Length: 141
Image (tube, rainbow, N blue to C red; front, top):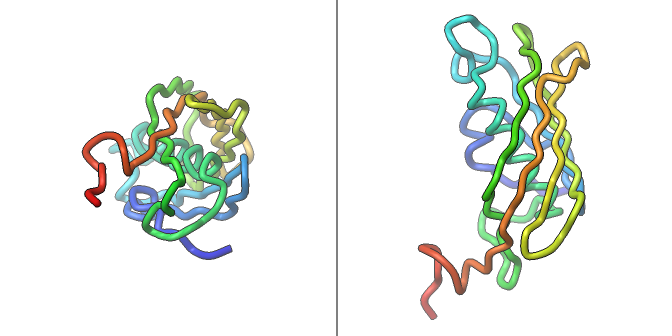
């Protein structure tokens, strides 16, 4: 598997461990960058981990830093997250599985603590967008 710099996840110290069609797994260590004053993971860091891993599961490959021509990008359009516990040790691990593909793709993600306890559950919806045709990323010809 070639390495892809998952920009936001990499920026906060996490990494993608496994990416294949319909499934991805990533990890986020506890650090000052991602912890709140109570020295556990910030909710935003947990959601960032889950969202990046969900997008990777849809994309299905590590790829490169640029989307391949003709490949649609999974814009997150809805995230439903239940934060169940936190972890004062880390790392957190997220596993995402695509449960429905289409113009809107749906992914389930489970985030677990270093002891294997479920820290968060996320169901997300992603609009599949052709970056060559839609939005501010529309490429000129």
